Length: 141
Image (cartoon, rainbow, N blue to C red; front, top):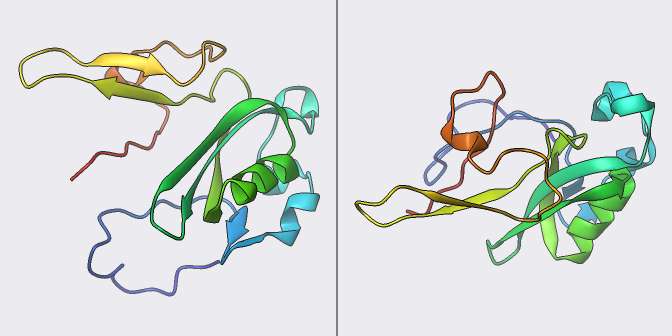
């Protein structure tokens, strides 16, 4: 999938450059069978099955998030597809970087972070601190 150029169009608030899509038009990409670090990123110990995270959208617009240990690129793609994703991409890889954290707060109270799993090594307030690493934030309108 490549960017056709021009403005993203009405209703698009942001665009994120990433790797080859794991799932595109409802199909798992054939490229997921190539475990190359040049394609999918360098893993600790050059292992194929590592902590990986990914996000996808279903046909109804809902979001699918997958995060877990011992996942190959192909397994991550298949899980996202099986969960109904028609478009999906890999996010972070390796245990130190994979995380999914939600926040709740009132209008005058501080944000309260909650990790998706207790197995994540990142601090729960990771995204509330300055960082040299990029991240994706999703907020309701």
